Image (tube, rainbow, N blue to C red; front, side, top):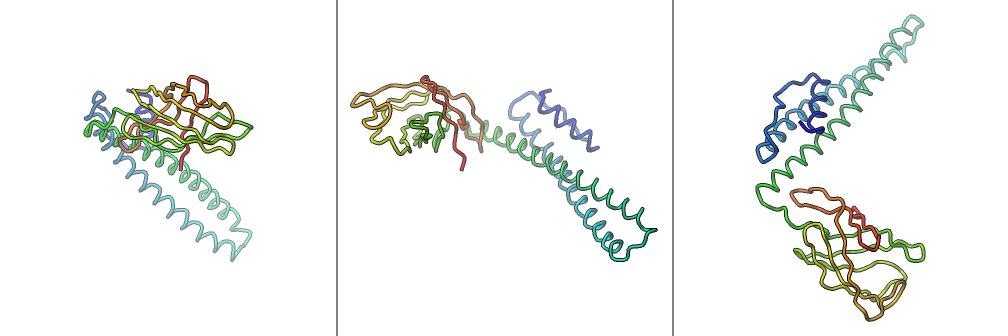
Length: 228
């Protein structure tokens, strides 16, 4: 069993929630069963969140009576109720944290199902804006990549760079190749085309699409996907 599934199983034991977590070998059946089991667990966590919220609201309402009509003999009761509320708030925060983590895990499983059923895996998605470690004159250059299937090009957003063209950008597995020409600005190439290769170092699956999140180029520059 993978570390991720062991972690899920630990959550189930802690929360006293029991169902069959024995999963088949990785593949379509594996991800479908993981999706079903996580859906059950998420439902349980959502019920627990609702229960704890009601408990907190109830005891906070009761406390208003203790505060309004305070007598010394009620001090012990008030302290007990305040401790209950504090404990329930801590449980609520932890439950919500685990709930969000399980939702992310379920989305991952659903993305895997979509990948296998549609055969969408193949070409990495690199389309979008990328922050970079390239900082001419101390200002970061942002690369805006446009992709059509396995072909791509880019433009650069930087106050000191203009007139950069690209050609022959191609994605082959996790390897990237592109040629660029920069007539003006730092590291100008004049009218000469320069070829550069890169490698996708980090990626994740987003709604069935294999999405690159970090690219390292042979010249040492690193691209990190700029999230919206």
